[in-house]
Picture 1 (cartoon, rainbow, N blue to C red):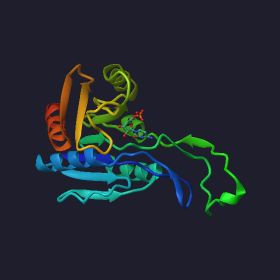
Picture 2 (cartoon, helix red, strand yellow):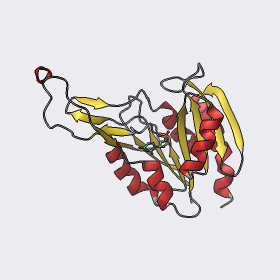
Picture 3 (cartoon, rainbow, N blue to C red):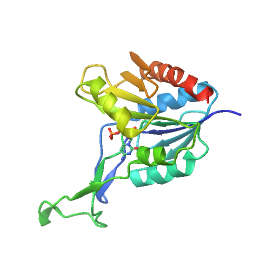
Length: 215
Ligand code: C5P
């Protein structure tokens, strides 16, 4: 039977009122490239994507969501049968504590913006994983890529941590190219790129595939 791959991609939006939200510049390109690369390897692919303006990849089940909570619910429903979970989405870390049902009036003055944490989808899936499932977390790093990636690999409890360099000229947010440092809990280390996101996606799957088939 085909391996099942579950991928999250893109940003989420966390609304303050019906027309204003917190978000980030993620375009979803890396997650979509991974979905296509996984499909090309013959996997069954579920792609849960925040608001992006990318065409729906052929041969992939696309589940559009908007908020972190909607993404959590969708992922929660799809995680059970997946063999490989790629948590690529740039999920908002915080959301406004209150979502006003009506547009806030400018005349009323600047509102106080109290934030609360969004659900950590990756952490929740790591907590409920069953033996045999391979989980890959992503991290956008601006400082020391290696140190940040090592710390996150340990703290997230994932099998692999893919660290994106979003600070340099190599790419990441919105770019066609990317450079990823992929660290494995097994001690493996791969530098992927700089190359197109399609090439980096292929290389990433080639690096994690052995741990899927050896289970
Ligand atoms: O800790 P940090 O936000 O950098 O972790 C990034 C990783 O965690 C990514 O894999 C991202 O998809 C996931 N994440 C998540 N839910 C959040 C925040 C991050 O699944 N609320």
